Length: 78
Image (cartoon, rainbow, N blue to C red; front, side, top):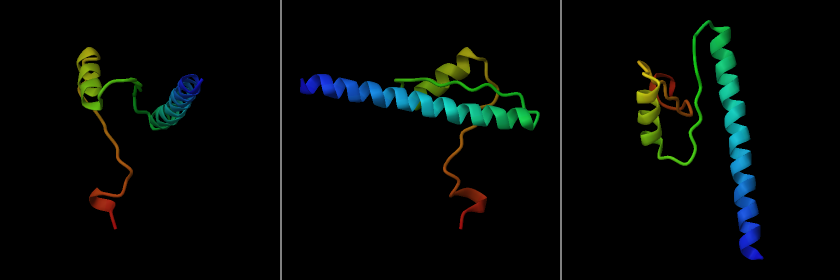
């Protein structure tokens, strides 16, 4: 029974992560649209980030990849 509960929790976590990702990406896309920037968002699951980024960039023939951080570094950091 304990294994079943763990599986349920994992499923719940994955569903919550998908929902959160969808919400974040939708907000980013809406902001890009508002600014007149053509953008496409992609959510890749269960892959190492670097591998997913490179695979997607190749598959989509990307000429620009934008990556953001939490915003506490760079020119505006305290």
